[in-house]
Length: 319
Image 1: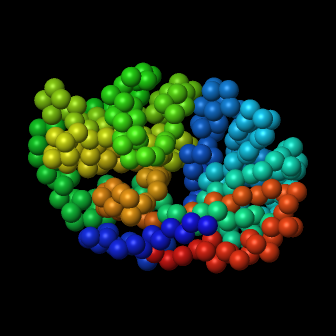
Image 2: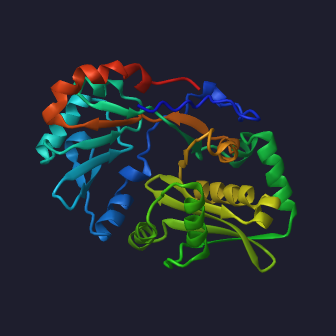
Image 3: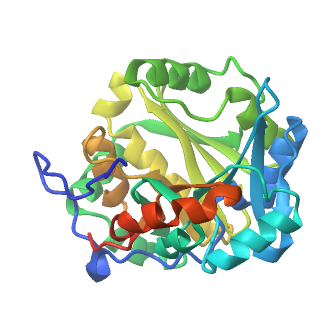
């Protein structure tokens, strides 16, 4: 089992977390549990299974060439583990191996024989329900200084629906960055399907210095929430703090449209400390997820003793 330590030492401290760093309540569904995401998957021929017995949790299933299937429940609220078993059986998934990644720590999953695979990570959630003055006051000092500096430059900011073009420069830049840093995100086709199936909910913010595009942020809206999906800044954009300006503009626009929360994604202090500081500098709070578990109900009883060994590592931790 991999144990990820959020408190790893950094060359400079992260911004302090208001309220003891306990994070915002996970009251709004994550992108992976939204109706908008379900529509995008369905358009791609990957119609998810919905579990009405489990707060309409969304389940994706991958079928392999040998006939083997693997299901996944990502960022769902799993407060009652016994209901997980009942819901899976009721929807024909009782014999299918399932990967569970709860929205909140759920160590009681060990009681039904789920095996812990990866200990809980943290995400940054930004409350957008406060006033503009409150949001600006919540900015970390260095972040606010960079915003002020960016606003003093002659940068032009645009907002538009995401172009449905796989060759758009932001997608190409993101693909290059994924290869360089060795990680994988959504396929471009899925992001395009999200934009097509959810009109006006994939918003592209771009910053221009003269005629040069120097930074961009793609935000996906879902329900009363939104998710920071893709972003990139050129060297010129970085020197002009264009990313800070775009984030502030996105925050302001989302709040004006009644969006209550912006999910800024995972915080990785070891591999991306600069990005972690950027996200937390917005005034976002850390919120702990529930880790990753494997559940195969036919072998649940056999795995139960093994599951309980790592139960403490899957419990809630203070930052």
